[in-house]
Length: 321
Image (cartoon, helix red, strand yellow):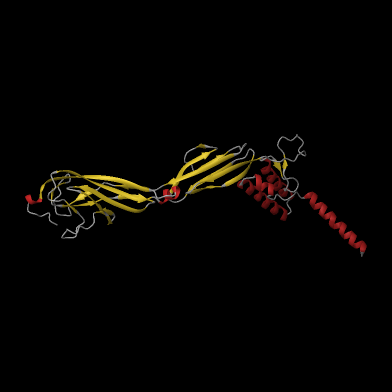
């Protein structure tokens, strides 16, 4: 019985030896492959691994050899070999013509530091160890309401770019990005009207004693708390706050209007002249506020002129709305 066990063990060892001699190592993605290869290169080795197993399961020795060789070809592009089992790092760059001659090599790394300010991100961020001679790409993304302001490479601004690649890295580098608010606020052209009474003629000409309406469009993005005021001086300086109605900014309802019209009235004592109504639009910029630490407002102004010529008392009072 003892002799039988020894013979069985010997047979098993011989079978293992035969298999090990005739079967090349599996083309696995090793820790060195993870460190030195790109995503696409690692996928190529994974494809070789799948091919190796397919060949192994079908008893195809040539297919197994080819799969292992394919994995080694990928590693060779980065000047190293995975060795007999695919798990080693054996530097092959500059070796002798003897294919069996390799020497171990400790790669040189350089640190690339990436930072970003409020309003967006850079990927990857922080410090990255990059192998000498390789490349590192960074992607910059602004948050909603922000835009890329400036990207600085090793202390020098390269503009508001969204991607940057350090190629053939042979020294330490830094990349930093700042963001700015993308908020905007703009007042359009104010259109004066008479509320349907027919008292406002071409060229914004009317008589004292009548009322006028306004429609002022405002375009804005990424702002909050928009306000619009109108300042004018017919007989004394006045300011009224407009209200947002039906997609435009209008005068508030005037308590003196019998019909509840949204208008301002020109006092009958107003002298004949050309007057200016100035509209001021103001809104909080939340993004700029976050960047500065204190409230930041955007403003815009737009003016229209109105010519007063004559008095309503010269006609039939139809302007008393």
